[in-house]
Length: 160
Image (cartoon, rainbow, N blue to C red; front, side, top):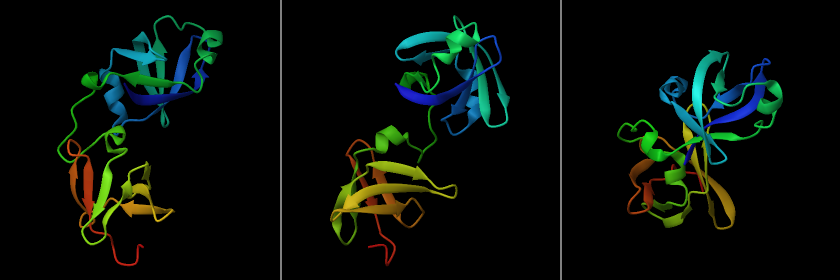
């Protein structure tokens, strides 16, 4: 199961959930007919957007009191129901734990976090007991092989 949104609040009195989309394109949420919360599937009755939030109406969540119970929970979908990613795009969960290998220094550590900075992603690992943030930029990231379990990089000068 992969997270597609975080329920941060309710909206109105009819049980709508205020959701922060956790997908690259929030419009993808329109294509999902069922979502899971804590392992229980709910049919999507409606979705609309307001500011940066998706307002979702799920079958069986029909009032504010019921909707309040879902604050802080996540909407999930089985991987096979998600749109296929373009070449060179990866789900963050697939990157976690991959070995990061530098062309000169060899193995640096494993991906233990991925941060979105606005302009690019950053892979976070621990190297020699300290956090190391590697920018995901052309020329830095050389190869990603999910099946083999590694990311090859060329660290920018002065990063370590």
